[in-house]
Length: 137
Length: 217
Image (cartoon, rainbow over all chains, first blue to last red; front, side):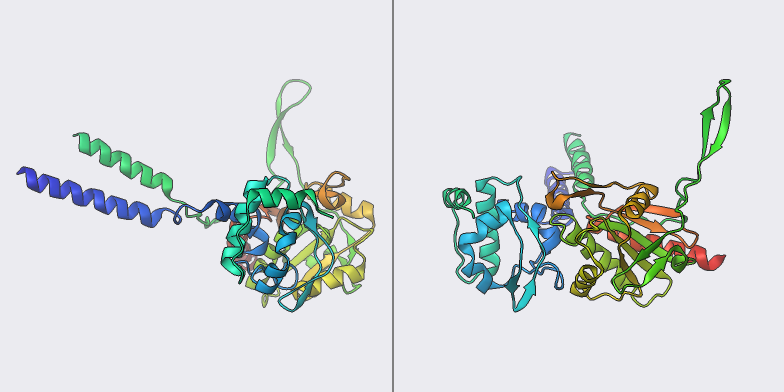
């Protein structure tokens, strides 16, 4: 067998394998915020922020997101309870704060959520989250 | 030859990167608690001990103030769990996952659902009704029930899942997130993690296995 043919065969092997690997792996490596979202938020709020019937509010209401951007850190860090109006529906299901998350992770997940569903596309910094968390009610 | 090993390693790594959760098609489901166990008696001989797990007769009250008894579940397949309505952590996702199973069998009168509150103080009948309304379920099919505290906690113990008041837990209660699959003779046929969506697919597959078993007999 001549060298060129071997190179071609090997190269095509590698290409096929790479394509297979890409197809079989779950998806592109998640951004940090997406990873936090999938780990801590998605089981209730859904992979696409759709929420669940009248039990769990969706995260896709840009009005709610944009009018509560200042509360985001406190809601994620310390939880929320009582009635809230999201997408025109009243929700009243307590959510516990996610104690496991640090400022950087909250900032990352905030950026992920606001990038996907807000109109403002607000960007959060870890410093800002830290300040908010220190002043929760 | 070097390339050959390289390719072998590549193939193996492809095997490991696969992340598709497969639902197992089971032929038969186990009956929990009825296995024959070999134990040593006081003479050091091995004897067969038969531990039969049974859920005792119970009476509870559902979101429509109906008295629900074990007899209502005779010859039905039913899924049992323990929760409370103001639970801020795992219950909403358990409810969501249970609802996925409910949707799958919505028009199948052989399949029922039984959720017990472990917070008797707050989860009155109207509170349970309000919670059920948020999910839009029928009280004929999915009973959200309350009873005397001792009755509920004794039931949890019989199903072998944890449920306890715990001031240190979010919401004030600590409990298992398990779904328990029961057959028409009130035998436990499966345990699932009610917080995992993958387990929903398994429970749906297992209910179909149980249905086949029921209709064969």
